Amino acid sequence: MLVAERQKKIVELVNERLSIRVTELSKIFAVTEETIRRDLEKLEKENLLMRSHGGAVSIEKDQGEVSYLEREITNAEQKKAIAAAAVRIIEPGDQIVLDASTTAWYVAKELSDMPLTVLTNSIKVAIELSKKEQIKVISTGGTLLSQSLSYVGPLAERSLSMYHVNKAFLSCKGVHLERGLSDFNESQALLKKQMMEIADETILMVDSSKFGTRAFSRISPVSNLDCIITDSKLDEETKNQLEDKNIKLLIVD
Image (cartoon, rainbow, N blue to C red; front, side):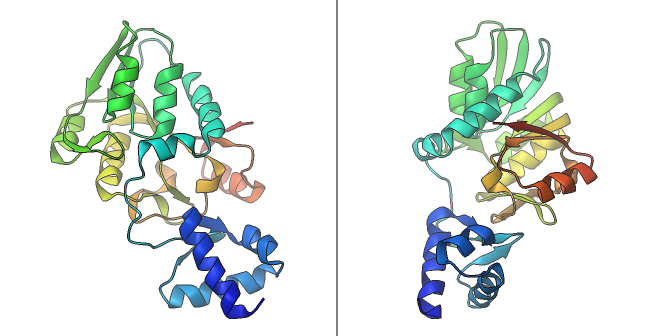
């Protein structure tokens, strides 16, 4: 395969998957990782993608809100396993905040009916929890994003500022050890940052594909996390770096 053809296909793959690792591209094109890094460097200079720690991320301008239906079927089994692990650290009497991620919805589905206060900007989370009599649900209100069925904007931000919770359960699109947590949507990123600020403890729920990638809007440094729940595909180097930052890791199969 010609160099130009390989680089064209790399851009197509990155835009299709939103992010991809150097190791995976090396296997796909049967070339060395160093060759792939040179390709990514060239493509970044041409503004066709953005390099990230260990890979590349798409910079297509239509990386906005992904529909809920699409998110529900993406890495669904991993998200369910991560949500189940999150539920195990929620105790009766807790005051928690859940974001509008699919994983947070799975948490809401898995939660037992117990004395609990849940603050959320997600319509789907609120509806799921409405079936459980002992759980008090507080919705932020705000501007509705129809694709994700969530509230954002100044009203949602003011609503969050009125509360304090002991645990925040969040997800995001990118986890970069140097550049921090990020999301495609600026409004969601601002709200997630505030969710972290009102919580005693922040638990991030992400599958391993999110590591080493960066999305458009920065949320917070990784060091502000207390715990990360992810799957067993996370590489050892990243595990070691997170442990060096004193971030608790919960690995699910």
